[in-house]
Image (cartoon, rainbow, N blue to C red):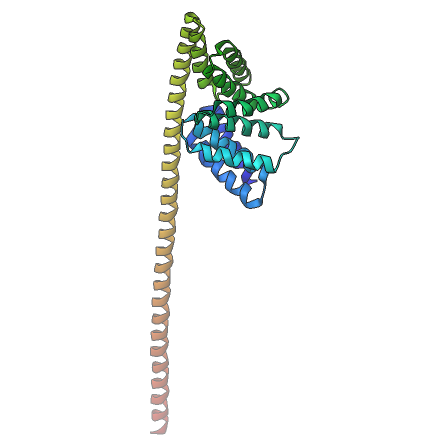
Length: 273
């Protein structure tokens, strides 16, 4: 249950607000759970997601997660989970391309291409269009790359999926520019900057909201601690009062017993004399 919760929370954080920090934290939490329960398929997919976030940020730390994901997919290949295999193939292609191994990267992209059309997963298809398009663009196949970018963007808009849209718009601007389509390039650059600005505002709102929620949580915790402290003090006061009452009662009982004893002694003396 926790595995599903953290995975869904991460996906929503990316798709609705491009909140990569929250997504990365939840993906890591979900991956730990998947590893502990021995769910290799889920762990491989989560490693793919982790690696993709690092690679989006141009962070080479994503390479080790890409390799782990690919190795897991090789060990637990499941024909019913082609989207997982496609993701791992793309990420390995990205990693090899980042290392300058273009020919080796092409092998993985080609393998992913053979599976991409059969995968019933919008995220994976958009991810493939973006990454394979970038690979084609790096090989000066701007027209083919732009076709893939436009397809990925249409899927993103149609499914209200913000993930990778910023990168797709920027890639479309670059592909159009290389094709000498300056009008199209300018349009895509404007769309890219407009979208990036709106996402930056959204991320600031998310950050402010998290800070606000944290402050409210701290205030709530302080209120609870204050109430608990008051209860402890009240219990202590009650204990002290009860203790004093017991002592007072014991003293009163002692005085009364002494009074009764003295009266009895006087009565005996009177009777005797």
